[in-house]
Image (tube, rainbow, N blue to C red):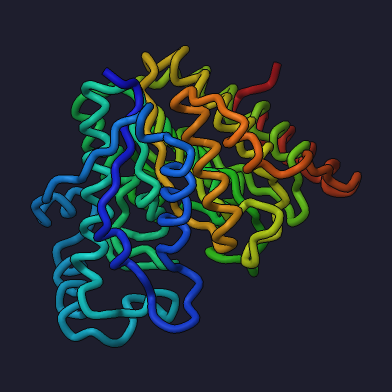
Length: 350
């Protein structure tokens, strides 16, 4: 039995916004092609998602919203939000198959150590609304379903934008730790994710936002991850880790001003992989999400899949950027201030 499963359906390509919209499925198909060319699917199993009952969405979305998406999908025009998420004919079904992929990947963890759905990760969708190109929040849904089997779940979101929808839906949830590293300032989408947002009720302390300044490169990003995210995961001891890996933290992304390289991403993925084996019996679910330089995002997902599946090859190594990036002293000082404040907020002081 292979340790890793990769979920894919060609119907993923239906989730494509019209015109010059930055969200296109080309990045997913480019990543899958890179993996096929390198023989990945001789080493890991390629699995097609199963059909799901749309009512499962009601675990995280209100029925009125689901019905609204369905009606707009039939209409085929307009917007699901204030302007980021345009409607096209069949958007309901296109979004549903992406959710099905994530739920299939979660199900596969019953027999695999790791499962990957680069077609998932729609972390901006909220209980009552679409947002930021995201229609249904498969991240929050996977967590809620996983809670029926796993005592404690950790979501680690390294997309360049704050996972605000996931946070909103799970803000009071006591069984799921929500960690998001993202670029942050008040005028940057979605405008949430400051360090004081820590959860509420039984979930207080289980929302961990690591808001990073523009220009944060590999060195400062990895330090923040190790000092806050890793320590919080160790303290929480999850039974399952969900990694949401948006490619838009890459230095060449047109929408975000973080400066991770593929090598920086790989350091994060290696550590999450290690933590999964240390605390979660290897149970790791990897999802995609953003990434608007398609080449960079495809390479990030390919080298990450290779790491998780333990595929070693020079043909994979050549996909990496040449070298690590360095932050300016100004950015490093800002990140150090953020780390110190977060240690106090979350009780991680040595």
